[in-house]
Each structure stands twice: as C-alpha cells, then as structure tokens.
Image (cartoon, rainbow over all chains, first blue to last red; front, side):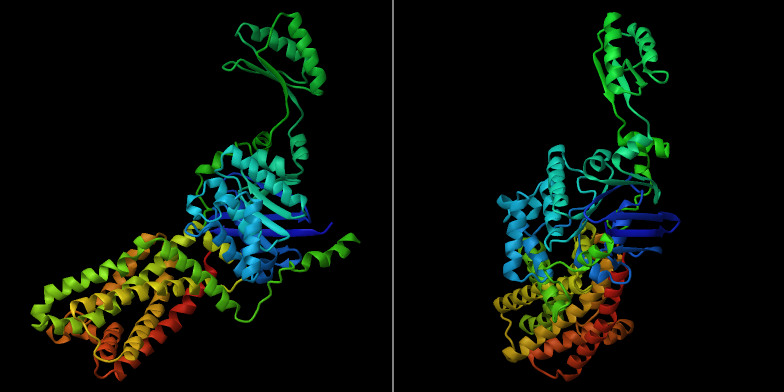
Amino acid sequence: MTDTIVARGLVKAYGDVRALDGLDLTVPEGTVLGLLGPNGAGKTTTVRILTTLLRPDAGSCTVAGVDVLRDPQRVRQLIGLSGQYAAVDEHLTGFENLEMIGRLYHLGRRRARERARELLERFNLSDAADRPAKTYSGGMRRRLDLAGALVAQPKVLFLDEPTTGLDPRSRLAMWEVITELVREGTTLLLTTQYLEEADQLAHDIVVIDHGRAIAHGTPDELKRQIGGERLELTVGAQEEITTVTAILEAIGTDRPTVDEETLRVTVPVTNGPTALIEAVRKLDGAGIAPTDIGIRRPTLDDVFLQLTGHQAEDHSTAPQREGARA
Amino acid sequence: MTAVLDAPRTTIPPTTGIRSRPFGLVRHSLALARRSLIKTLRTPEQLIDVTLQPIIFTALFLYLLGGAVAGDRQEYLRFLLPALMVQTVLLAATTTGVTLNADISKGIFDRFRSLPIGRSAPLIGLLLGDMIRSVIAIVVLLGFGHVLGFRIGTDLLSTLAACLLVMGFSVAMGWVFVVLGLLMREPSAVQGVGFLLSFPLTFGTNMITPTETMPGWLQAWVEVNPVTSLMEASRGLINGGPVADPVIESLLWGVGILVVFAPLAVWIYRRRT
C-alpha cells in the first residue's frame, strides 16, 4: 500500500514552547489516521504544517508524493481541509459559500453551482441553502465547512477536530458523513480529543502529547497495551462489600479495587464472560443482588492515563498554542 | 510492487484540473471581491461611515465654520466638499484592515490559504470589494452637496477623474490598513491605530481652513502631507483651476505607497502563521 501522508521529524517551536518535537507519522492510502491528544498537544500545528499553512522549523513531509515544503501550491490542489473553526463566511448563504470555493478552484460558473447543489444535498443543507450561514446551527456550519473542503473532490482530507463543540446528535451525523467518505476511498487525517471518536473512525491512532508521538497502533492494539478486561459491579448496600470483594478476589487475576462512595468493586479478569457467569452464580449463592454488573473493556481514556500518567484533559489549562493564529 | 504501481495514481491531480491558468489571480481576486461585496450589501449598518457620517461632517463644518472661514457658505461648500470627499474615502479605507483582521480570526482565511490560489488574491479581493464603499461615499457626498447648492465647476469627465484619483489613492492607502490588519491582534486595535494614522493625514490638511491661518509647524506638515495634494487635486478637478502639480504629486504618492505596502502586506501574509 502506498503511503499518502508521510511526516518525518516535524519540529515547530513558538518561543520556548515546542509545539512539535520531532513528530513522525504515516497514513497509508485509503486509511484514516486519528491524531489523538489533549489541547496543546500539537494536533492543530501538525495539520497546519501538512496543509501548507505553516512551515516547520525542521522535518519533512509529503502528501500524495508531493513535497509539502517544496511544492505547497501543488499540495493545495490535492487536499481538502476542514479546520477547528468552521471557516465559512457568515454573511454568505450556504450556496454562495460553496459556489465561491468552486470558482476559486476554476470549476467554472455552471459546474461550481452544480457542485454546490450536490454538496448541499449530500450534507442535508438543501433547505438552508439560501440562508446566510450565520443563521446555521453549529452542526450545520461544520457540515458546510466540510462540504467546502470537498468541492474539488480531494483524495486526501484533513479534518481538525471536526466534532468539537457539537451536540451528540450532530456528532453522530458527522461521523456518518466521515465514514462514508472513507468508504469512497478518501485518505483521512483526523485530529480529535475525543477518544471515542478516534476509536470509532480511525484505522490507526497516534497518541500525541507535548508534540511527540507517545503511542501508535490500531485502537485494539492500544487497548491491549493497557491490559485486558475488568469485571465491574455495584452493590446496593455498604455491608455487602466485604462479601463481594471476597468473591471477586477468587475470580480475578488481581486484588479488587473498591470505590466506597459509589459502592463499586472492580477486578481485572482474563476471560470476561466466564468470570461474569461465575460471579453471578456465587453472588446468587450468597444472596446478593448487585444493582449493576458487567464486563468493562478499557477505553482510550484509560490508554491516555496509562501512557502519560495524567488524564487527557490535564493540559487544557496549558497555554493555548493551537488557536487559529497559533 | 504494489507501491510502485500505485504511486502514479496518487500523484495525479484530481480531474477538476486546477493548474495555474492565465489570469488566475484576476479571476480569484474577483471571486473574492464578490464575497466582500455581498457582505457589505447584507450589512448596511456597516455603511454608516460612508453615508451618515459624510452628511453630518458636511453639515457640521459648513454651518460651524463656513461663516467664519469664508464668510459665504456657498463659497465654503465649494472649498470643503471636494476635500471632504477625500477624507471620507480615506477614513472608510480603514475598514478593510478591520474586516481582514476579523476574517483571519474567524478562520476563513485559513480556508483561502489552503486553496491553490495566489497568495495575494484574498487581499486584493478584499480591497476591490471595499471599493463599493468609496463609490457610495462619493455619491452620498455629491448628492448631499447638490441639495445644499453645490455645483460642479468643471465637467463630468474631470469630476470622474477626481473620483478615480481619490479611489485609486484610497486603494493604495488600503494596503497600509491591510498591513495593520495583518499585524494587530484585535479588530478594534486596527480601528484605533487606523484612525490614529488617518486623522493627522486627513485633518492635518487645508480641508476645513486655508493653510495661511495655521501656525508655522502645522503649515510645514500640511505642505508635506500627500493628502493635501490629493485634496488640492480634487478641488481643481471638480471646481476648476490648476491641477497638474497636485494630480502628479498625488499619483506619485499613491504609486509610492502601493509599491511599498502591497508587497509588504503580501510578504507578511505569507509569513503569518
């Protein structure tokens, strides 16, 4: 398989802050790479470098075989970019926004209009086509912005936090659109701070922190790295905890952890379903009815915690280096 | 082997064929000027500085100073109006910088920068689109002047030449405000610095009073101020009188400003990260 996006040793510093500190990444053709990290990790900087908006201090990158630093204008012909801030003109209607971009791509008046209609249809914006974009909801703006990135049918797409700030329903709608694009063969680099999103959309995930890749793998590989399944159960009464802990200790591979406040007991297990059946049987024998019981697989949040020793949200208070003007 | 076979496919540009074409910059700039034009027409409240403001300034200066300066209001209106036209258009030019700054912070310029278009196209488009504001200002001023009894002393062609000269100079100055728009952090800062720059330039002239009435140091400034030449040129072309010197001076200044600030703006825009 050809590698459509390749970056080697990208470095970008803003004063003393190294936004990128030697980042490598590779995205094979037709796949999705999820660049996962908290605010300030260097995600937007990476996207801005790969989309020719920013020059790195060191390193090299190619998109579809074209050297981004040497031939940026050619790269711009090949890519689509939808940024963190919906880059639509508020005073223009949805149709006018897309038509303008079509004209800028030399589609010609007729083709530009056709393409605008097609995209509005596809993104469920036909009804709002002739309304100024400032009357759009957040989800609609993002869809319009993504439509703008697709005007010239790029084979390589960069989406910078496409669902940040969207409500759950709009997020699901966005995921569907993205999934469809990937099915059609688009190569996609996606940044996100939502672990679930990377899990859902990406074939490969690079976890970045402080401008460096700290882990790389498929979602499953990353989860495996973190350890196996856990059996988790919640009881209704404080006095039951001792009994439950004893039962789970016999089933699990390690000592159970107890959360006194939520009355939740968790234990790592080797085979989830078997452990679950055994636990239910023993609990029933002891006359205990848990309020909740289940097998928990590690989330990517756990992955992040394990890899960095801190929660993914930790540096949201760090200097904002990723704004539109970063 | 697959890698070798697949390679050419991925490096071929999309079928839409967006290679560099002749007049690309012109077409891109015009497409972007259209955007700026639509925007202006949809937010008429942003036109106050080229509609209400020149009317108020005309009335204010005319009735406040007319009697004192010229003794005769009609005479003063002839003196004031062609110069006020220059001021209104130049003050309105600061808006380009403000709009640009706001556009950049909203992210739409990132979209433009990621497109295969000339780097200067978004800037040229903005300046071209904002020329509608100059046109409105000129029409409003001449119209209101007409109501007050102002009459063109030369002919339509000379008046048109005056308008074009003022608008051309304003586009050149527009590049200065574009530079400000690219450098400042906030739209309001662009506005502030823009006025700081354009007030001495437009008020530090013989717009409302003849130079002879001023103290020496101010006379010196008014003499070297290029906007004074532009106002003299505008008066000459609209009212009649000698025009060659002020027109040539204005043109030279306009071209000089353009030659320095347009490339500077594009350079900053390219560097801006």
